[in-house]
Length: 494
Image 1 (cartoon, rainbow, N blue to C red):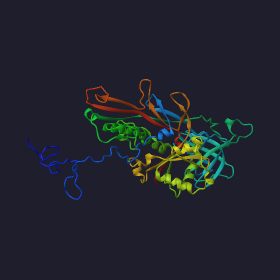
Image 2 (image 1 turned 60 degrees about the horizontal axis):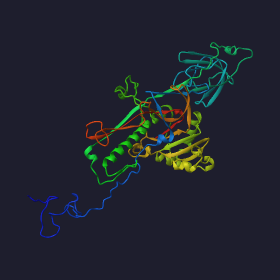
Image 3 (image 1 turned 45 degrees about the vertical axis):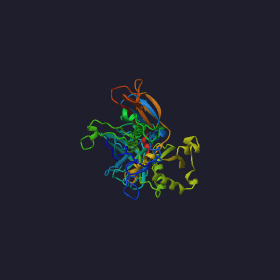
Image 4 (image 1 turned 90 degrees about the vertical axis):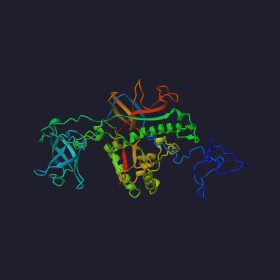
C-alpha cells in the first residue's frame, strides 16, 4: 500500500513525536507570522449557537396591533362609506359680466361632495374667497343645471354684487339655511326667478372595493440532508432548536412568509388598467390585478404630510390637527414612525410644557400607562386628540425601508385612527362595525386560506410522492380594507 502525507493516511514513526507527516489538520488556514498551514491536534473551543447579531428579525405584528382578520368568500370585498351631511361645493367660479351675481361650478367631480346641484332657490349660502381673504353671504334666487355645469343666481345681503370676489374658479360655497317670503309654497321659493323649484337631497354613499391576492412560498430539503447532523445549534425566533440545519431553513422560510403576509398588505399596489396614455400597465396586461395596500390607500384617499421635522414640528402637527377637524375628528389615534420622525416628535413634545400639551392619556389602553408602555407606546394629548406613539420596525429595518429613509419620497410614518367604523356590508345587507384597518382572507366551510401549510414528498413525515425530499408549502389569500381613509395620515420625506 502506498503511503503519503495526506490527512488521514498512516505512516509509521520510530518516535512518538509531531512531524510534517502525522499532524491533524483542522482547516487550511495560515499560521500567524508565517506561511505554514495551521494545524493543531486538540479540539478547539466551539460556540455551538449562532450569534443573534440582528436581534429579532421578524417585521410582522403591525396589523395585529391595530386591526383584525375576518374571513370572506368572494373575489372582491366591497364596502360603502357615508358622504358628508351638509351641502358645499368647491372650485366655484364667479361669472364676469352682467350683474356679477352668477356663480357656476362643475358637479360630479372628485373634488365635489355631491354629484348633482342640490342647492334650491331660497337657500342662503356663504361664499368663501381665499384669494381676497373675504366672504359674502347671499340668498339664491335661481338654481339650474345643464349637463355637468350648475348655475346659481344669487342676491348678496351686504353688497350690490359679487364683483369684489375672485373670478378664477377658486371660490367655495356652502348652504347655511334658507329664507322664504310669507305665504308662498316651498316649491315656489320667494316668488323670484325660480325656474327649477325645490330640490330634494337624496342621501348617497361612496363605494370602495379591494381584491385579495394569493401569496405563496415553498421550502425544499432532500432526504439525505434531513438525516445529516450539523455542529451549529439552530435557534430561531419561533423557538425552533436542534442540530438539524434544515430546521433553521424551514423555520426562516415560514417566518419570512409570515412577514410577507403583512408587507404585502402594507405595500400592495393595484395593477392599472389605464395609464393615461391609452394603454394598461405592464402588470395588468400580463394578467395580474394587484391589491391596494395601506400606503397606496392613504395616498389615494387619505392625507399626506411632507417634510415633518423637529424645527417645524408643532406648526406642522397643528396643521394636521386642523385637517383632522375637517374630517372625522376621531379622538384617539396611533402614530407608527421611523426613528428620525419619532425623535422629531420627542423634540417637539420636549419643547412644550405638559400644561400646554394637555398632559398624557392612555384611554386606548384602559387608561393604563403600564399597558401602553409594555406595547411600546407613549401617549400625549394635543387639542382634543389623544395620540399614542411608537416606533415601527418595518420603517427602520435595513432590509426594508430603513435603508432608504433619506429619500425624498420615503415613508416616515403613518397616523391611524383607533376604534371602529360603521359601514354597510354588501354581502350581509346590514350595517356592521369594523376596525378602520382590517384584513379579509378567503375561507369557507370547505377551505380556509388564511394561512395554509402542507407537506409533500416522501421525507419528513410526508408520503405523497416518490420524490426523495420534503416540500413545505405555504399559501394565503387576503386583502386589506382601509376604511375611512380620510382620517389617515402618511408622513413622507420632503
